[in-house]
Image (cartoon, rainbow, N blue to C red; front, side):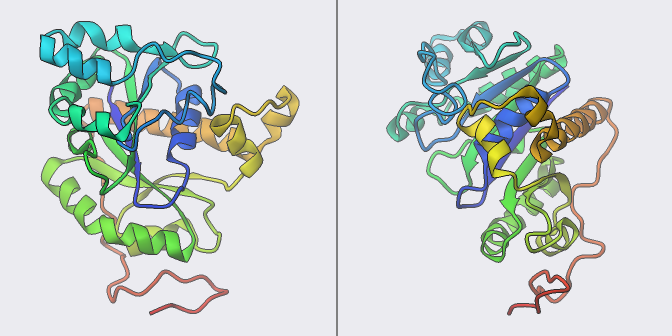
Length: 280
């Protein structure tokens, strides 16, 4: 199986919310790793509503690496996420300063995480925002699939544009399947236009559903009947299944196109809709 990394270019497009939703809907056993170097878990006070004490975090993996037993410590550090034992997670560092201690761990940890994939356990990583000091670049470069999470507004697309040349180059150099996870396609730009402009293929699209998102970001309670009707509930299940299939294909050495360059906007104009003119 494989390693799926989620990150953003800026703002708050919903990386952690998306990662939690995908993990809970993932069709196979999955480990969610919080690798955001900002510090402080978004899951413990968010989805878990502060009801679970953080007995472990990724900093334990740094200590284990120094002591030479990273592989033995990895899964022992994981905590349950939700009711299913098939979904576990490892909280992030507690402070930004602690993130500095992770710099020598990401590379060997990538090896261990890929090893879990070969054993049938998929791994999702919330890597936070690109460009932050101590960002876990080795996890991105060694991933099976990486998703740049972005909304479809002009400011969000403009911010993502800053990072996509580097991501395209990384995809070409490392054979990583790097694509987009777009939140709110059609608000205002459709996913196809955003993909052409950013030169990355949309691998997942999720509706802008604030009420549904609060289930994953804040642990909001909702009735089963209401949740099954929520746009995000249906979409997250479908996209989790689709991404899991891409991971399976990668494990079977089926190549996947990662850069949508054939029909990209050649003159670098902003993507447009029928309602709005192009922006310079």
